[in-house]
Image (cartoon, rainbow, N blue to C red):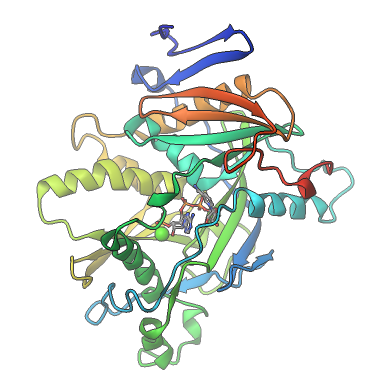
Length: 384
Ligand code: 0WD
Ligand code: CA
């Protein structure tokens, strides 16, 4: 059927499956007052060690930012012999569900109800939703309504995880290597000085992508409450603040040095959009970009304030992204999901596709098997 141009979204029932589409265009309908985004609040965190063992409630693997030595840094050193890549086994929402269970089994005021957000998903998935109005990337999600919460996982087309070619692998490695060179596992105040041997040790270690620190936080987009889990790169402080830890988190990124106008435009149009959305969602105020040459040498390091990024790209080129449109689209997307994901059953999965211009419901399946089947594990069921 055709698509309604006015609302861009239409639902019709054909036999048992309803056809439902949420289009990006016309984009003007998202250029209205920005939906409120509630200040994110961390509810729990967890760490993964070198063997991918999870420690719930632990900030063990939250490292501290410590400026790398630009002269000596080489982001390709150690590749590939000191690169331990995490096994690409799908972990689905397990760690996030474990976080929810942890939060809801913690002793709390008897008058406080359990945490029951309308949505629960990884931050990386919401990043894709926010970027959708200005991106041609395609993605597919699985959504399940369970005890009043819509859980969303991604049906990852797994080959692009670490890159399939050796060159892609090196590109990913350089990003992780920058993280290794720019952080230390203890507060910088404990350093004896600029010649503390532990600074140089950063370059001789192994890059192991099993190791992660994740923050789980709650927020609201418009009226929709949501709990997200996000990998956080480092702390930009000597200790994790007890209240509002997000205020001290920082996101690390690498980018090839920009040498012409075309590269600058592409950086603003694509990279800054993703970086902004990814950091905005968990309320991470600072992004630190390491600019590198093709040979892995560092050129310089730049700090950007997340909240200043939208203004910094505004009006730089026709059709550039607009943060208000991203947030309003995400708001509309969640509201649309609530209209279609209605069967409260952990064995029913709604498959949602974004084809680069519009999101649509592909299928509703109950009890299917495999990587796109049900993802609410038995231990998470029947506990409220
Ligand atoms: O977001 C997703 N699509 C998924 C996340 C799918 C399946 C699993 N996960 C896991 C992640 O491994 C992590 O434990 O969820 C947790 C939180 O992830 P996130 O914060 O939602 O991930 P995202 O925002 O997409 O990426 C953040 C960082 C990346 O850094 P850069 O600077 O490149 O954006 O997490 C890393 C990556 O370093 N990362 C991964 N590392 C290994 N395996 C993966 C992965 N599947 N996804 C992200
Ligand atoms: Ca990063």
